[in-house]
Every structure is written in structure tokens, then in C-alpha cells.
Amino acid sequence: MIEGIAPILFTPFAEDGDIDADALRRIARFELDGGVQAIGINGFASEAYKLTDAERQMNVEIVAGEVAGQVPLVIGLAAGSTEAAIRQARELEKYQPAAYMVLPPATMDNGSGSFVDHYVDLGQATDVPIIVQQAPHIPGYRHTELAVEALAEIAERSPGARYYKIEGPGSAEKMKELAPLLPPGTGMFGGGGGISALDELQNGAAGLIPGVGFNEIFIDAWDKWRSGEAEAAAGIIRAGDALVKAVSGSGHETSLHLRKHLMKRAGYIGSPTVRRPTAAFDENRLPDFFRIVDQLDLRVSKG
Image (cartoon, rainbow, N blue to C red):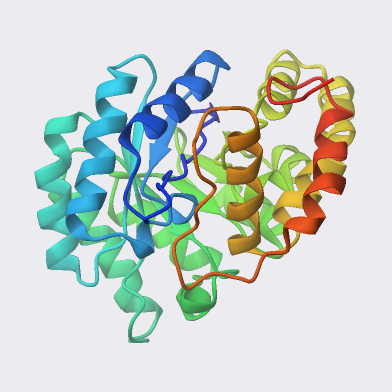
């Protein structure tokens, strides 16, 4: 079972917008050295929705090579059809992923039953476990949110659906409702950059799938939580709350800008480029942001 802190790596770009492969390797190594329990690529945090098919494949090759079995590898899938998702899943099995984090086909709204069938059919077509991803906070996926009964139906009909990533408003409450409906051995994960991490842990989360940059906050909290030190875990999360809210409370695209500027300042990437279209970003906010970072004892802190 995957559990703990499993960040989705961002995709570093050079100033011309091309993928910076060496920087991606450094980002992967940064997270591995920090003690994460798993690593993911090609999620929203990777700007996978802005990449070509060849670039997504390139990302997987780079990260799989750097991870090299040290921790479980999670690969994001966001195919536009069930048939395409099955083909992608089979093609990516050679990288030995521990799970596929799967978004539903979102272009059309064919009803919740179609999304349920998508996950069931995919889960039955591959031996790689599936993470059912719910992302109603992303505009294009608002209509794909499934009720807890539908999520439980997926688990009942497809043993391959082993994990559920629940994020967006009300994520912790949804986990509380979903937990008793899932079979033993099924894990739930929080997302949203960790903005609801404490509530999600309290409601049954098996870990967190955040972004890059300051995951020692969540790793330390997870270690305390697993050892039964709930108050200590809560204290660690609260101490980092200002930073988490600064990054994850301003929208997804802004969080990408902030994380990339943070990792550029720390010397891990050469450019903070975020592919277009993206949210307007005012670099005048960076000094205040860096002050929040530097008040904490982080590997990317200065002072």
C-alpha cells in the first residue's frame, strides 16, 4: 500500500518553454533526499495539461530513471476516453508504476455513471492499482465530482481501484463519509497542496499528495501522526500553515509560480517559467513570500 507523503513533481521549463530534464532530475532528487514515501509525475502540479504526449512520456522516463525503485512511483493519466486510458496504462506498465492517478474524461458530461464505468473498466484492464482522482476545484473538472456512493461503487466493482484522492472544498468531510463505505485496504489521500491536511488525517486519510518545495512539514507531521502523536502532528502542520496558505490559497496557477520561484532561489532550477496561458503573477509579492518561507527551518529556507 502507498501511504504517507507522495508529492507530484512540477515540470521545470527553460526560458524558451522546453522541459529542463536536468532540473527535473534535481527536483526528483530533492524530494527523495527529503524522505518522501512516494513520488508522482504528470498531475496538475506537473502542468501535464500543458504538455504534448511526447513530453508527458519524457517526464515519466526521467522521473522513473531517477526514482529507480527507491520509492513507489505514481503516474498521472488524464486520457479523453476509456480506450485511450487503457492503452496509455498498458504502455506505461514498463516503468513499473505503483499506481496510476487517474482523472475522468472531462470534455463532456455524460453523467456520473459514465465516470464510474470509466474507472471500473480501466481498473479491470491493468494490473497497476488506480488512484481515483476527484478535482472539483479545477474548473474543467467541476462536473466530474462523484458522490460517495458512486466512489464506493467503483471500489466494489473494481478491486484495482485501490486509492482515492479527494480534494477541493469539503474534502475532509467527504473522506469521513467515504471511509466506512470502502473495503479494507483502500487508501484515501488529500491534495490541494496540503491546505486541509490536518482535517483530512483526522478523517481517515492515508497520506497526502501535495506539490514540491516544503514537504518536510508534511513528512514530519506524518511521522508523528503514525506514531500516535496527534497533537504533535497538528502543531507541525499549524506552524507551517502560513506558508501552505500562501502557496495553495491563491489558485493553482499562482501556486506553480510560487513553487518555481522558491526552487529557483534555492538553486534547483534555472528558470521559474510556467507555461501559458497562466495567471498573471506579480513578482513584487516574492519578498513577502520568501519572508514566510525563511521563518521556517526548511531546506529551501535562507538565513
